Image 1 (cartoon, chains in turn purple, brown):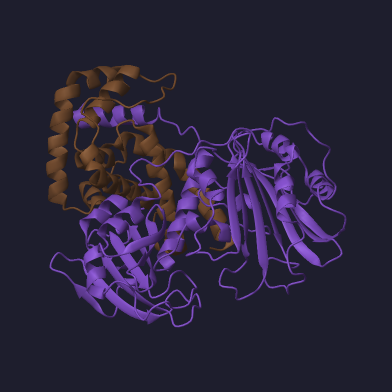
Image 2: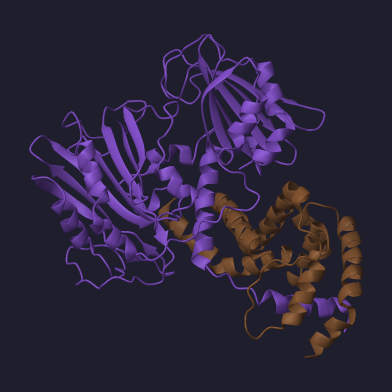
Length: 421
Length: 169
C-alpha cells in the first residue's frame, strides 16, 4: 500500500479517538462568540463585558444575558436537588427537576415586603436537549402601594474564578455608563457583591431607573436581582420615584441562603478556560495608554478582549477615546471601507471620518473623529476620539484631545497585534 | 438572527462539532484545549455567516476550511511561543485505540510546520484535492504540492515502517 494510503488510514484511526468532552459547551461557546462578533462588526466600536450591565434583562431570562459567562448554563447533566412536584403554572419547556417556577415565585414573593403582584412569570430549572441545565428565574410586576414596578431575580452558576463572574460584580465606568451610584464589596464568606443604581437607558432617553444587585458566591452561584421604577424595563411610564426595594433590602434579598440551595441544584459551574492566545481584558487599553502622547493624563480606562477605552485629559478637558483591535475582518474591505479611503504601500486601508455624535448617544455638541484601518490580512484597528469625557456626555472641549495625524500613528502601530480580540 | 435560523444554526453546530474537534486535534497535534478553542472560534465565525449560508454550497465543508484558516491565523499570532518540538500535550486516551500509533503520529505531525500540517490534514484526513487544499489555505496549488512532498518525506522518515505495521493490525 502506498505510504499516502497508510498515512490516511493512520490519521483516520487517530482522529477518531478524539471526542469532545463537552459538545454542548462547544456549541454554546461558538454561539456566544458568533453573537459577539456580529455585534462588534455592526458598530465601529462596541463593548462587551465592560457594558455587561446593559444586556442583562429579565424578560429574556437571566440565563441568556450575562456576557463573559457561559450564559448561566451549568454543565451538570442532572440536578442534584430534590425533585419537587411539577408546577401547575409552569409553561417552561422541559422541567429538569429541582426548583420549579411555582416555587421560584413563592420564594421570591416570600422575601418581598407587603404588597401585591400583578404579573408573574419565569422558569424553573430547565434542561435543553443536550443535557445542559438552565438556571431558574422569576419576573414580577409588584406594587407595594406606591406604584407598580418590574422586578426580577435569576439564579445561575458561573466559574467563580472566571472573567464572567468578575465582570458581573464589577461596577461599570461612568465614562461608558453614567449612573447614580455603584458599590462593590466582598462579603465575610468570600462572596462578591455589587449594587448598581442607574438607568435603563444610560443616556436617559427614558427616565426609568434600574437598580441591580448581583452576588457571586465562592462556589460560583450567581444571584442576580433587578428592579425598576416602572411596570416594565423599557417603554413603560415611570410609576414611582425609585424602585421598591432600598439598597439594604436588595442586599438581603440576594444574599438569602435559599438562592444558594437552589444554585446547588445546578451542579458545578463549567470551568471558564480563557482561550489560549487571547489577550485579557486589559490588553487593548494597556497598548492604547502606551501609545498616547506623554502630555495626556489618563483619568479612566477599562477594556475587554479586543476593546478598550481611555479618558485622557491634556489639561484643557477630558476626551473619551475607544479602540477595537480585531482579526478576521477582511470582508469589511467592501462593506465598510468605502468613500474616503487611502491605501498605504503595504496594502493597509485607512479611512478617516469626522462626525457629529457618531455613536448617537445624544451628548450636546459632541464630535467624534474616527481612524479605521484594515490590514491586508484582515487585521483591523479602529479608534474613535471624542470631545466629551464619556459616551452620551456633553462636549467638554472643542475638539478631541488627539489630532487625526496622532490617531493615525497610534492605530498603525504594530503593537496592536498583541491585543486583538 | 431569527429564532428559526438560530435553531438551524444550533443544529448545524451540534452536528459538526465532533468532526471539527477531531480535525482540530490533528491540526494541533493533540492539543485538546487549543482544539476546543479553535472549534468555538470556527462555530462563531459560521454563526456570522449563517444569514448568508444558503449561498454557501456546502456549509460543513466550509466550516472545515474556516477551521484550518483559524488555526493558521492563530499560529501566525503565536509563532513566538510555539511549543517545543517533541513535547506532546495532554490528550485523553480513549479505550480501544492504538496508543503507540497515536503517539507516533501526533508526535510526527507536531514536528511539521503548521502550514505543512494543515496540508496533511486537508489532504489525508479531509481527502481534499490539491486544488481544494490550495483554495482552503489561500495559497497556490504549486505551494500545496511542495508542502505535501516535503511533509510526506518527513513523515515517512519518522513513521515509515511503523505505519505499515499498524495498517496490518
